[in-house]
Length: 190
Image: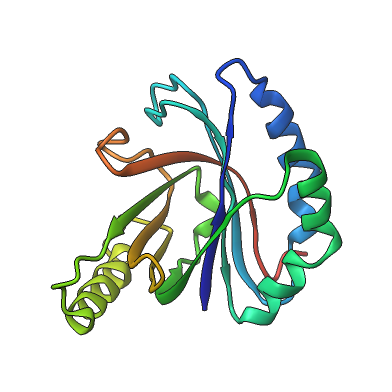
């Protein structure tokens, strides 16, 4: 599996209702998209007391079952329409060590994403085992409705992503970006 996210920072005075409307209109179009495990349509608003964001963002996060789905999407009409409106973003991708969703994933209202540099002295095998275990335990422990641990070996970063029903206890923690979930595109949507 591959995790993917692009990020559109928006001006402080940007009318985020435009993004909310776009998510309502466009979000369901990717329900049942072949190869997609899920897509979380994420926003953050500057000054939002719940998310603690310092900036406005539109930052969708995807988990793909296989790379063909990612490639088909990025080369297809939906992504082209996005780039025509917002420009072509840098797409961050991570190889998933663990990506799990709960049966209650549709209850997700918030998300957190933490990107951490992997130190050159870190044992990758130990890191993988620890992060996989933490991600796997987040769902049965009731911490998350979806949990992803993944890495990328170009800049050597780790991503921890969680979908949540309730806001995190410390949304403004250093290194943590908290988002609102506007829509989830999932397989099996009627």
